[in-house]
Amino acid sequence: MDILIHTASGMLMGTTMALWNPLKQSIGARFYAASLFIGGCAGAFPDLDAISQWSGFDSTLGAWFGLAPGDDVYSGRWWYSHHAFTHSLLCSLLFAALTFAAMIKFRRQPEARTQRAIHFAAVVALGWNAHLAGDLPTPAGSWDGIAYWWPSTNYIGGTGQTFWWNNYDVFLLLISGIFLHVMVMCWGRPSKHWLGPLSTLGVLVLIVYQLNQRPIDFNDRSRPYAERERISLDYQRNLLGDRLFGWMSALDRALPVYF
Ligand SMILES: [Zn+2]
Image (cartoon, rainbow, N blue to C red):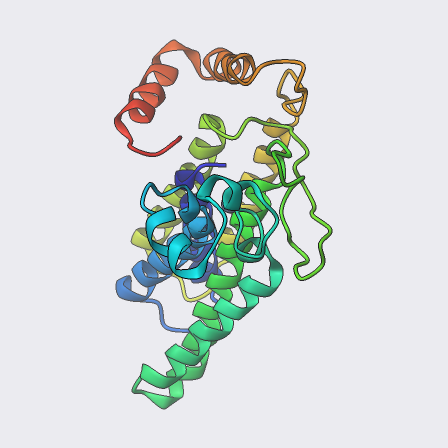
């Protein structure tokens, strides 16, 4: 899916963990905001492997490391290709461990340090995996899914339940979950609250339901790319109604990234 949905899914994991708070940390606005921010970063980071699509890739990284042309790298199956190493469980755990190590090293109060380090490592692991889960129902592309079990070369997902872009309904569900969590936080700042994971579970169930309502198999290559995109947009228009669809389309057009 697109970077906005991935970032939102990571942010939702951050707010879920902050509200759930199994380690009974005292939650302040800064702690909550940090969970939101770090979750969002973890949700966005796996797509750094799309750097091979950057216009300056061939003359810089490609030339320095003697790599194939950027388009070939992007669609290939090297470890640094799109949907490869950064889309693996191993990479998510590696970054979670790095977060833990950084928090342990740089936090001053020793009594809160370990708990906070565990919290933010969990936010990174969940946010990262939320991104990977979001890529599973998109079309297979040239990769046949993502290398979740890297270094295994068995790719998973790519099931084509939905198109890569314009999943406005999924985005709105994620934003609703985040909004609910922020409201709960502003209202009560609870020290421990099951509303976080329960509401997130509700959002995930609705997303899975929505993804299974799409009218076609988006892996059906007998339909040209443009036709699949149009069908996806028509589905969103019928679902959201003209007004909300218009707002989402305007947002889409205003953004410099695919949405
Ligand atoms: Zn991705």
